Image: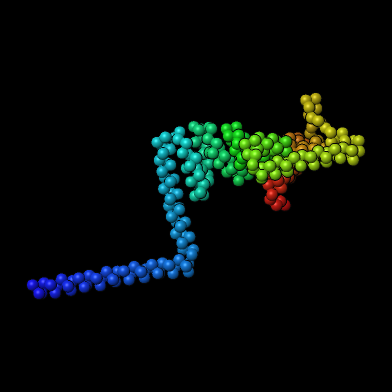
Length: 280
């Protein structure tokens, strides 16, 4: 009986020693983790980034499964957002285009697609998408601001103003929006003043060129001149300018050179309105 009791006491003693060792080891590991966290903060960032990437991958798989079973589901916009966050932009474009076939009035998806186009300098495509967003959701201030910026880069100030004024009805407390409207109004007034001054400061023959109004009675030969090319470029009518270049330059190298200059002029103007430095 005494031996059995001695054995139990010894066992209890050894068990408590083992628990104590485990506790001390756990505390040591906590201290070590704390040391590494303070000395190497980038370790935490990498761990956090790794966790986030894992979560995004799981969400991607989840939304793909939903769309696989129901191609008409609106979750395609969530999938596209996840893909963009993962840097899979080309795949996101495909998802958005396909999803919009079934969900034409998904304003969120159209805005996302238009923004991707804009970031890739596919301006015409971006413009079309933003116009559709505002047809579906007239109060979408972000779409209006981006579309207005595109119009301003194309020197279409009246359209830029109309776009912002249309959305301002829903956001009268947006001071930034109000400031942009005032800036465009000021630009329009300045441009009108410059045009008036130019008419009265230039000789009579030059005024005739500056006051040209194209209509159906204008012959094609009169349109295809270097003078008309300059007028189209000044007015921001780049498609018409391109057409003139194609007509007046017979030499292919000269024609290609003129087209390249036209592209740079258009890009520099867009960069200027967007607040970027010129690449030249």
